[in-house]
Image: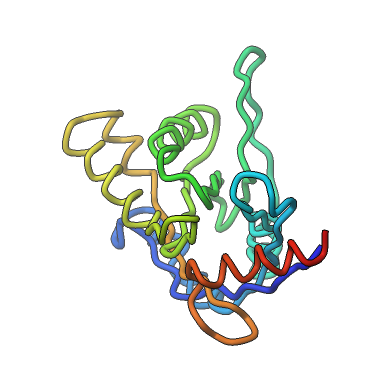
Length: 197
């Protein structure tokens, strides 16, 4: 299996003046340049969809920067799991990472409400600006910002909760070349994977 390093940079929080930005703003520049690995488990399935260790690497990088791992306990009957949670400056932050599917972002906003209900102070939805799929590039961060703005405009959720939900965007680059991840990069990775199966 070919694992390709990808570098992340240009981290941004929306809203820029919200609670998450006030709490985590000093961490964003320090996240710049962290890397994770991408691979294609099976190039013949689902048009060669990629998988990565982004979640684990993001969590580890935040811990290196002073965050502490924590857990959020869900009551019996609430079959919910989050990607990870951490404490920073005595606040609990629940993290939901959406790497590939823009249709799940509204569901992530609902999950964020659940995390806030069961102990999180802030809920963070992490989204790439350049997710490459078989037909093009999706800016999931912009899509997430639009969904959150619509939730606020049309009162889809309690305003007190919506004020504690933030979107965190980042851009992805091939670590070897410095080029942004795009469709050609994804196809090259898939073809490399075909050569190894």
